[in-house]
Image (cartoon, rainbow, N blue to C red; front, side, top):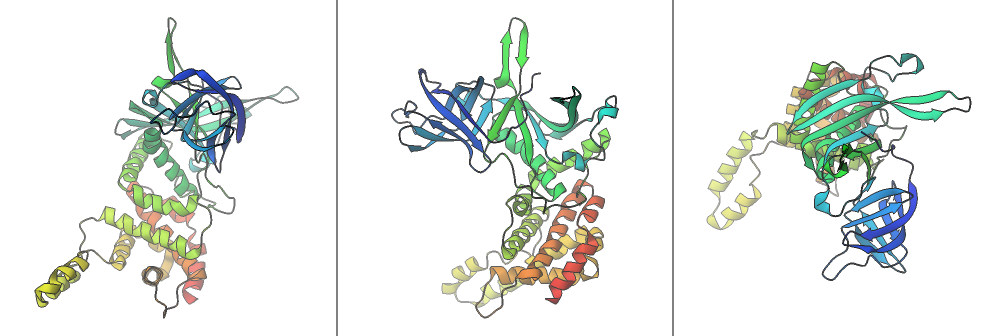
Length: 445
């Protein structure tokens, strides 16, 4: 299998472009890719003007600097001398004619700092004979995940020495070919969130390739299956050296049975907990935000996590109070009060956080220490003060919110990874002595 090059730096490539339905009408233009704006196409003329009753070309193909490109989901953004198109995703190395023809059953992903979450190191010049990493797991729904290391040629030095690097690659395969957005959701999403939580920072992709029926050509000599590099918006996340941890929150097992167990559990939990996990990692991938916003994100994540883990929990005292209230009022107010009290049976936020803390023991207690009980009370009170603002009450802020967010982050991660089956690294990652120091100061403030 031939493989396209890894992701380059942001690029600006000149080429010739056309609509698949009008191959004789070609126009020059620039394909530009940047982390901030994603993929855009600027044409030199209006030859790609949409047809009647057409919002614009969904697919544009072309050749730029000797390479075939397929641009999918193209939306016209502006028009002047030429046109500007925002591209949903771009494939380097293949040429197709329509959206429905694009199908892939393999995606290859590389992440910066990936070696830090396995208990192995990359091979060096003296380890060329060392076996490469080769692990595989069936994670359900016809999806398999492989973790492998491969040597990448970096050319030769001025002295003529051979240079290489050992790259750690995730390979996801599906039993049924899928469109790239579906493949991105089913494979890339869970892996990127795993890397984000493991590193406690935005997981930056350093390459992404796809392969499948749309990258395979047939001839008398047989099939030629290629990989095509794919770009979209965004194609990377912030990865600041000021964020993240010294020790990862989780390390991937390197024994085949343990790797199978871990990956299948992670993908199963991710499918069930997609929203709370998204809330938890939002702050890690979006850059710095205000203390109250960051605290509220993780508070919402805890509530969403509890709702999915304990969907049948109820508040019995509130149920009895609702029955008594509805029985005591006249009929003209009954419907209004019943509507306002329709969620009275749900556990309070305090009940939810306490139950998560009980599930997270003893690891949560190891991280937070003797201040766990007052910290939980402070999390609930601070969340209520932020969401139920009142002019006559002082809004929590500063170090108080920062310390409580650290506790809530640790609680979420412990509960999540405890269900996956690993917690030792989570405790180490959240640095108990560090957290307890700031919590003591935050509660005092």
